[in-house]
Image (tube, rainbow, N blue to C red; front, side, top):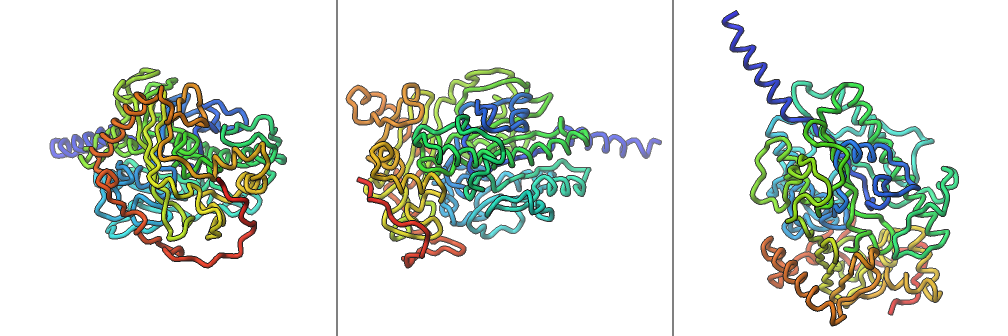
Length: 505
């Protein structure tokens, strides 16, 4: 017995250490604005799984992506750094290099078993990595034909999580990345009718016209949000039946906002404000909504903080864990009164493959956007028919995009067309309290000079502190090559459906 005692004490200590480090389920949808989840007031979409995490944990009312484009946003999530700090990792179809620290491998070094399904990082190329950043990638299970949606990934995400969970090393805590391809564009047009949804319930961003075609696409997009939520709910059920749900930190978010015009690839709230909720009973007091401004660059330090792994000094994000644990609602940390978002380059949407660079600072009251190249077209060159999106290539194909193009000269629609596709001034300023959809630019109004100057000072200070090359006059992003099937070339015009609409002013 005396010989066994040290061994028993070691086993007990190991078990205690493991219980102090919960499992982690990180669920991330693809192109979902915060405003389109039930917990944020949307009645047209049924999101019971997300709403449960929000209700039993903490809901962040003001969470923002680092960049409104999937690969750079996911780079920021993985590294805890702003996109301009990540070289080619800060653009779509770029390269995320192994010299950048990612939180998943730090978890692996701390004894976590890694797993993933669906969309992780990309599109682009990961280069120089000696280990799989996401661990075991499970893509075995696929949905039955009748449950698949047009053009999107047919993976059964929940079944793939179940496989990982059943085969995991039960002596280790796990981290699992559940990343769906939904609600990315390519919807089953008109699916809302079969689902029994009502046009009047669609929650429209203010920069889109109130038209049945637009409302219908919002509802079709909502069906894809519900698909994501269904898989999240099934994964939660698996954990609950196994008695592991309350020992699992669940974090749910999206990479950026919806894929309709003037949202994705834009620094307005409809492109940058994302859902974010966390649940871990015993550590996160439930039933709370907090108003602190949060960024997805905060995810990596938050997760590391939650499991007592040292946060690397190179990470620019700040841990949200003290807020999650605080038990408080409303504004918890008064220093979290702004976030910075950024954008450089998305698809091949302009001649030469150049992007539309922007930086923005968002406070509770104001949003200030700096457009570095106001002579460029923000949605893409209007007469350039490039793959895969066609004209205005930084806007995903869809019913609303086509509607705006087809009705460009309609006096009632043209203001929306110009907001989506027209050129913009070098500076934009919005009063969120008076103008929540950011429709009226007040940057040039004399009464706003002091407010604007204060925001510029705070934005510049942040960019300088985190070494944004644009603060030094450097502009490397347009020169980075596109990886994969797209190249930095003058593409011949592809024979795509549609034709250029009248040019914006």
